[in-house]
Image 1: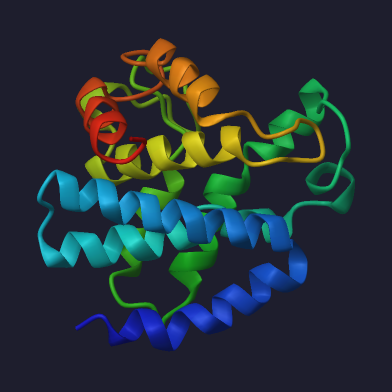
Image 2: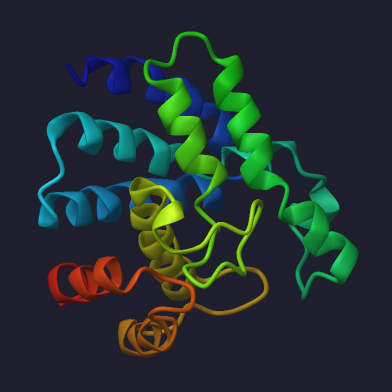
Length: 189
C-alpha cells in the first residue's frame, strides 16, 4: 500500500534537493518524527502514510520562493515574511496539481495548515484548536522541533534541551497540548 510513496518521493526529493538541500533534509527529518508521533498516538496505517508524505512535502512551496528570501542570511523584513508565509499555500497548489499523488487532497490540506497555531494566530487561515487538521498538528510539532535544532543561515541549531524548553512554552499557544505532550514524552527522550 505504501509503494506510491517510494515511487513518487524520489522525484520530489530530487526537485527539492536541487532547489534547497537544507529544506530537503529538514523535510526528511520532519517526516520521520511525524511518523513516530503518529505511531505514538496509534494512527491507522492510512493516516501514517498520508502524514509521512505530507511531512516530506510540507515545505515544497519554498521551491517557488525568490532566492533573495529563501537564502537570505539575516532576519526577514515584514514584506519578506509575508512572501515566506505563502509557502504553505504554494505547496498546497503544487500538490493538488500533481495528479499522480494518491490522496493528494488530504496531503495538500495538511501542507496548507502546518503553520496554523492552536490559539488561532497561525497562517494561512487562522484556524484554532481542533479546527486544525490533526495531521497538520502532528507535522507542526515535528517541524518546530527540527527547525529549532537545525542550523540555518540566520541562526545556529539549538540543543534539544533548549528546543524542548521553547516547545513547552508554546504548549497551548502554538501547539496542540496533547500532541506536544506525546511528542515530548515519546520522541525527544
